[in-house]
Amino acid sequence: MKNTATIGIAALLAGAAGGYLAGKAGAPATDTTESAAKAALETKTSRSGGSASANAEAKRGARSIADVMKEPGQLARMQALMELYSGMDAAQLEAEAGKLDGMPMAQRLMASFLLFGRWGEVDPKGALAFANTMGFQGAFVRPTVLQSWASVDPENAAKYFSENPREFAAMGFGPGRGGPGGDSGASVIASEWAKLDPEAALAWANGLTGRDKSAALNSVIAEMATKDPNKAAQVASTLTGDDQARAYSEIASKWSSTDFAAAEAWIATLPAESRDRAMASALQTLALTDPEGAASKVASLPEGRDRDRAIEDVAGPWARKDPAAAAAWVSQQQTEDIDDAIRPVMSSWASTDPTAALKWIEALPQGELKDESTATYIWSNRTGDPASSVSLAETIEDEGTRNRTLWMTYSGWMREDRDAATSAVQSSTTLSDEAKERLLNDRGGQGGPGGRWGRGR
Image (tube, rainbow, N blue to C red; front, side, top):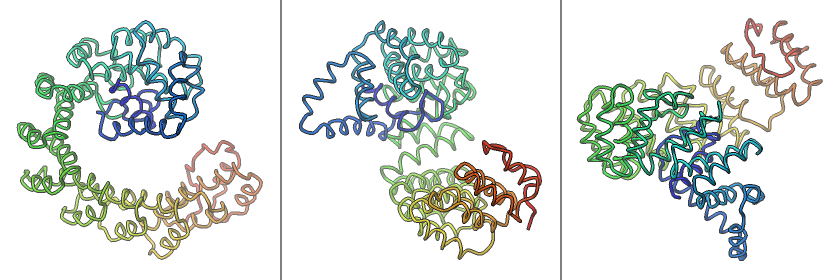
């Protein structure tokens, strides 16, 4: 049941409810997802305390999804669902699938993931046949079935995928296309196959063509890199162009998570056209555990896209640890994407210490950094009063940023206290007459600024 647990919990904790609605549910399972599955079990056990045996007995007695959904705690319900489905055969799983439509949406999404994940292991063709009767909803479960199938029988999963491309084309999951989570079917199969037999997975990937081949090779190499980065590097050296650069980047990311010094030494041997991209990926991984150390190495990258990306990747994790230090560091960087770099920093800071964040903003000179910091502060600060937020938004120099921020602020104010917001809109000397009319008439707050929204500065 290990694969089903990993797929279901990983996707749900990532917010990817409903298959590929909004997350990388088709992505390769990682140590993080394994830990999530373990955490679910440990959470349930520790919560039960001295009554663990009694609770376990009660769970074993649960024979319906209705019983499972009475469990307190979301992680406990996930574990109970996995226990419920793990003992079912294909016919029982089909019967349970028929009950999903009568469930509330949130429960249905959770159960669908786990049910079809299990069904994909024991009877994938039956699961896919049922998915084909589900209309539009079937597009959300087919990728889950495919991944589960590939996790236990990748060769036949690959054969079926190649022979039935249209079955997975919905939601952009067909051959040669990336799904909403960013992966193609070939990529998912290759990743699962590489966990079981990397050499066979590599041979299959090399037999593909076009974008399927590129995606599959990259997934195989990425999986190899988690166990033997030197072997992965040897395989990547046989590739060319962007395929090779992308593979080197994947290896750098995986290798740096276990031995940054070794990864850094290897990166230094790469061709110049691949080196900076690989280093940026390594720094992204290093920043998760040592953001200050990663920041100190950003300066080694030449100015350009890879360095800009590294600045953003370091700033976010650092902000969760020390937003003031991260903000100070970002403000000293020369980057074309200062807005992307400061947003995660200010979002964290405004949520945890809005007073300190605002004081820092007020000390900044006028310019893009201050504008973006101010806008993000207003979006992220949930404790400030609307009138103060409006006044702060009016200090933003860039017209587009100012208008978007004012629109958001006034719209939120309208939902909280329409009378007070209406009075503020009517008396504003910043808003144009058109903007006032749109705000006062747009009760849903969905109209957006548009047009000549403000009077200018």
